[in-house]
Image (cartoon, rainbow, N blue to C red; front, side, top):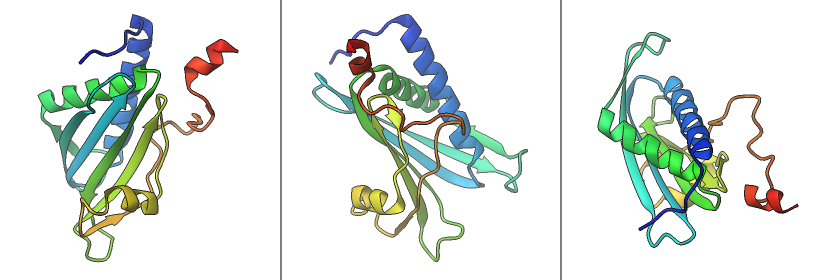
Length: 167
């Protein structure tokens, strides 16, 4: 299995973006044990790459909460996220399964983000249920929050970035 080469500048930018996405996601987590999963595929890759990360948040839901992750799994997850953000024609799905505090008896709340051409968008709860419902029986599927800062428009690109270079 071999990935398409990218410049060091693109890789560094993707790594920075991956770290920002992880910080935004983890900063929004309520106390409890959460599982973040992702798979990434791309043209020329025979099989999809996968990663999983368990995140434990201890505290009362305030800014002083303690977040615990296994360093090796965290590094693997951020690496896969970086690969997906660096590769021009990447695609995939990232989803977060969290304890369901306010979803009427459901065991967990699930939200998801599709990755298309280096960009994530938010799935609605309905879209997430269609994608993952048969795998996550008993979960409540909720609308995903943005993984980008408020001033970034993830829907701005209509074509893969390579197409804009050809214009």
